[in-house]
Image 1 (cartoon, rainbow, N blue to C red):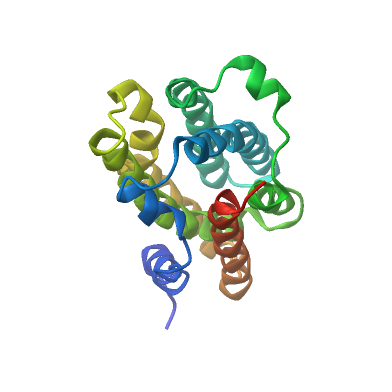
Image 2: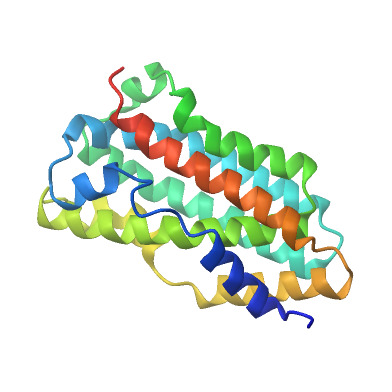
Amino acid sequence: MTRTATELLENAVRTLAPDPDANPLVPLIARGEASRDILATLALEQHWVIPADRTAFLHLAQRANEPDIAAYFETLAEGETLAGRYLESFAAACGVDEARTRAYDPLPGCQAYPSCIAWLALNASPADAVVAITANFSAWGGYCATIAKSLRTHYAFTPEACAFFDFFAEPSPDLDQKATAAVQKGLNTNAVNEKQAHRYGRLLQTYESLFWTTLLQPT
């Protein structure tokens, strides 16, 4: 039986959901047990992730042959621009200033995820990338919701300092609609390879886990 776009995306989110133990850091943050140095490193790594992902999403939009698929990636790129602005308040709350940001050397384990997004931007079918990225964002949004709550409860961060995580944690019906429209267009044009999309999604989830575990490793 032919899947609808909604069914395909729901199956991807369900199938590619990370193991509950795949992220050892977020539970520590949830309990208020992660150090502020680790939070600062998280902010510093995101200074590299956000602009890299934005560029990759713009490239995927340019490669897309269908307006519905391009619109999805354009919306993601706009979101990364906004997230980059919110990130500054979080970084400042962690004691990260401009000089420290410039001097920081990123951790390879944390930058594997944006490297994979960049690989998808160059090599994957944009329609398949929609499926993989949407599935990954489902897990990322849950992590951000947990972190945002804990930053307020255990770390006394201001709303402005939590805005980066609030942004990603907030449901986005518009983005969901654009993802569904993009995948439906991919199905209509035989541009979606569900098996390949799941391969990409598994890579992203693995690199997502590596991001968090790397933050806990001594440097």
